[in-house]
Image 1 (tube, helix red, strand yellow):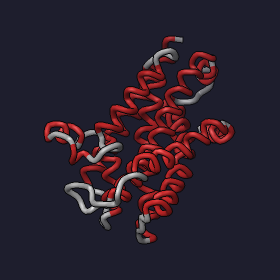
Image 2: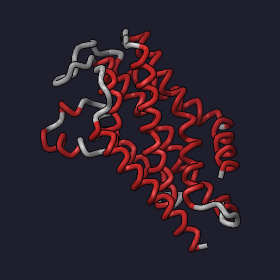
Image 3: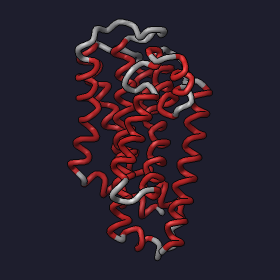
Image 4: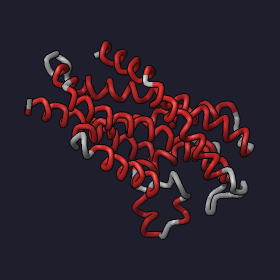
Length: 245
């Protein structure tokens, strides 16, 4: 399993096009969305818009890297027969899932840091040292939930359908979870739905740190629950696909 993890990380780092867009994309979005706005408060919170969008776009960038990268890569590997070769080894389903999650997680760190640098330079976001470190940690750790979802989607749908299905999932979770707009702007019924989505809990981790506190237990529990469901589903789909061969 460790060998496969090292191989997946190496393959990800060598994919210069994927690395470029995964690392630069979220910081460009931050400038496009947050740049033209004033730095007032988000309605219903003590967060400035710059701080809100910094966490939102860092989270969105991590989501982009782990979800889009995993789902499409796995679907292509299935078509090319790479996964069939892995089935000839003693690799368990959980080993394959963990290898994909680990390789995707490597991409998220530079994308998170660059968003922080851009937010500090362009919108004057200032935090304590411990907050910067804690933000990096919680956003990186939270992205593992969506890395597992990417693996599951890669096995759930065919190579032809994986991109549209992933895009719908990707934008749906991002918009409804409050990564593009503060959920306080949504109707109450939609806010009630969004607070149970993994993306809402994901953004909530960073927002709690920005306000000087620890992530809320509810957000941590929601993300952990989704991670177990996604990772378990991905491992099950891997084994199920194996039985078809």
